[in-house]
Image (cartoon, rainbow, N blue to C red; front, side):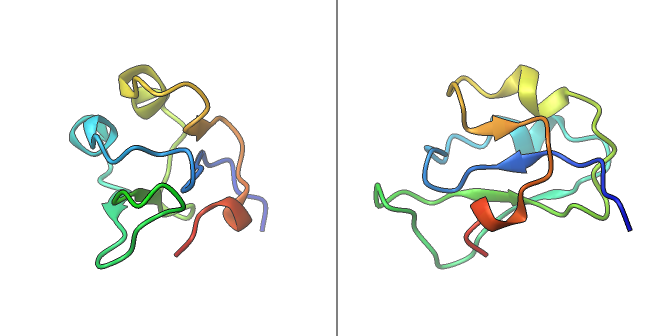
Length: 77
């Protein structure tokens, strides 16, 4: 199955969470109890639910934290 989902790059994410609030299908969640290489909490995208609406891309203030392609190996969940 080909997914047309976005990816949150866990080690770039700074745990701001603006992406979670704007997702219309609620496909973005916190990685509970985990931190990234920077020691911050991070979010991840459920690729099967993502509709590639660009909401998260537009909301995230961290350049490179969200990719408009599906690369699940970059999400540390």
